[in-house]
Amino acid sequence: SCPSRSTSTGAPPTLPRESSSGCPFSSRASFNQPCVGLTLPVTRQLTWQDNTAIRRDAATLEETGRAHYDGEGWGICARGNEVIFSDGTAQLRRMDPDTFEERDRFTVTLDGQPVTGLNELECVDGQVWANVWQTDRIVRIDPVDGRVTAIVDATGLLPADQRAGADVLNG
Image (cartoon, rainbow, N blue to C red; front, side, top):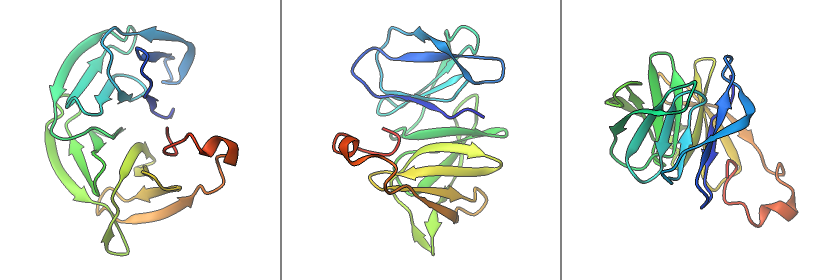
């Protein structure tokens, strides 16, 4: 699967056009309403602070609906018949993919302690991966019980000359 795309500049955001396999082509589609947010590869856009999930047509990227959620939107990924949503805390939410209604929450833990700052999410092979904000760690999370089952130490991945202007691994 292709990773989520994020937009975080002051310029009006664009979304990559997707192939039938879900991977982006080089062309892009613009949308007029400026907002900082995250997108799933096909049809979802999650705003950071506007409490809004935007549904888009996969072929045209035209907006087809909106849903409200509480809190900040930091990351999102699709997993089966649900989306997993992060808000920067140690809790991840299971959301209905159509209505964005919250189904339940679970706390992500490492050795029994909450892992805060869960940011960008990827759902791969039934597991949830998250970078931990303002660290060089990426964690693999068991979505059944919230336990961290692996840690990727990305220290040194970003060259020192580029590190000064970077806030986070996904930014």
